[in-house]
Image (cartoon, rainbow, N blue to C red; front, side, top):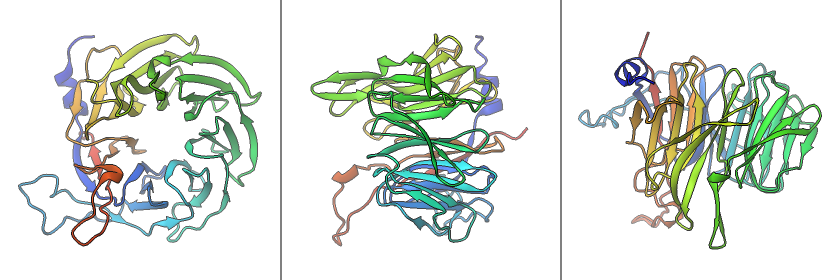
Length: 374
């Protein structure tokens, strides 16, 4: 492709317009289908919301010379509880304004995200035996798919939570899944980079996609896997994100996105983003105008936010100022993005207590960006 990066930047370079603080750390922040809220699941078992229609506030003590501190922030609404572990999976049913949340103990809960004080509508204490990694809602809003550490993909009725079917054919921990636009097809990816395409009517595997380069077994440790999946709007291409692992332990590897043809299973593109310290593609999306939107998380505290067309050798947009970018959500209007990161200098459970003897939990700044008007 021609080098028209300057023109692409003029059209698509996003500007950060808000910085929302979430303490303690959250897994992902997602725009609701109505566009009114951001919803996030946290390490403290809470489901939290921010009202995007409220007037954003600016910290009166913010230093105007420091751009980040001077950015406005949206008001957080009351958080809700109902989980007992990390809330790591989130999905929405637009018509009924339902949000579905799954946690690290395998619990699945349905809420109404628009209510002032949401209460569970239905729930399953053990939808999965162990960590529920991800969930997805079908395009018609009737079916919810979940996957987890128990190596099983399950389908549920979004209306009442009734279990409809389960697919037990994965041999490993299932990390991610997505519905195709036709609503009849589901893809799921596991620890060893095996991605299965399912006909949800018959429960049969249609084909498999080989993303095995995203996995390695070394020194009694399994590293990598298919960490995220995304499907193009026309359903013709599938992207699988993760890392090409180089070491185990404190994992290093090249963040990688593999793009496949859905009809044939053939690999079309392999996109690599940076060096071995940048490690994982944590989330990726196809932009309607033909480029990939990607966030990566590495070590120590390395994060990237990138735009790249599949046929190009390098991104036309890069932002490396955020730490450990681990989720990316596109607003329904297509004009805003929310990226969840972690605070600088975060050390996980290795952080020391403060001078008053309190544990200083990690935080997750949510960076809100806007595309140029036009």
